[in-house]
Length: 189
Image 1 (cartoon, rainbow, N blue to C red):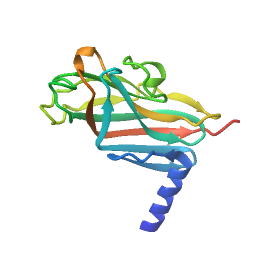
Image 2: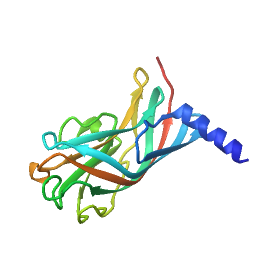
Image 3: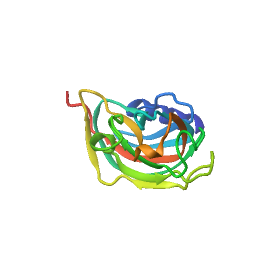
């Protein structure tokens, strides 16, 4: 029985898409016939952000070709700053984050940078390298992303609200889970 479950899980992953290799990120996708559940688990996944940009992205999934219908989902994430708080990412910095089909291109996360989970703000209140209070969010509305000619990617996007939140390049981690329920409606090309 265990071998059958493993085979079905691998088949679902091939049909659905793949997660890029990244330390601290694991993805389990289950389902078949175009209907899937993907659970993204973050275990101190590192994200570096530069002072000059004050935003960053991490690609967490490559969907298979087709129209992708995001039906729902939830997220619960915590953040911890690894670099010196007084000289990089400041104490109580205001971090915005969202899940989208495009990588962040500005400190204001909008449109496709947050079209899966809308922008959520979290104060980085963990002392030194401790985890912040959990930040939760839901998929607000079902959305269809057209990946029929170019496959859709999924990005965790982060940004700092003001220039006073970050004084120099810094690194922080993400810990928690995101669960998405979605369908691949196929490729009409």
